[in-house]
Length: 279
Ligand SMILES: [Fe+2]
Ligand SMILES: [Fe+2]
Image 1 (tube, rainbow, N blue to C red):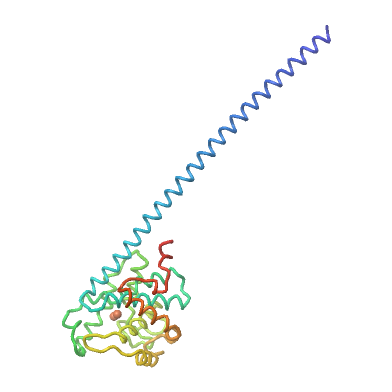
Image 2 (tube, helix red, strand yellow):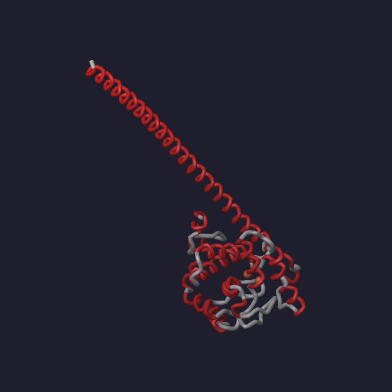
């Protein structure tokens, strides 16, 4: 009797354990299912997120292309009256960016210079045509007015939040300063002149000498380089000029590239514009 009782008790206990085990198993199964569902949900969220990021990236790229295109067209508009200017400004940008890269500047800074350097003369929009297009030499008084294109340009570009326009402002203001302090508008000298201003000064003078203007013929490469070398440490930062001279073949390649493709930023600019697009 007693044994029977014990057996029943034991059986009940076992049944309870079994029930508990089933319960635990079921609850574990439910938990696993929940976890699987959560996992699936997470994968879906992940996919949605990467598709949104992709869309955002495309929109961002379109925006930055439109922005750069707008800057380019504004610069052309500002200098529309000057012949050959569209090519000139693309060349200045490309030469300057190339020198910047050779100086060891990071890609992003070099690309900013590529787009900012073309704004160097934007202030000429405020100079009267009779001075801007005078075929002969300017009088002292006229030259004083002409010099103002630096400050006018900086003013046009001032107070921008854009890194490219800020750099454009700096370049507009300082591209006529000279290493020996005899430039304008602020007679800055040596490294007091911002680096971008020193770089663009070299690119700008090179391009001006090599180009035909209504009042002058184009100089040959030999004469141009000779004139520039004589200005080493006077007009130009000697170290940057050395780098420029050392890489003259690449500069000439850019020049031919722009001649071939017209005034647009081409592969021959020897810069990965795509870098900007991937940022
Ligand atoms: Fe200028
Ligand atoms: Fe220029």
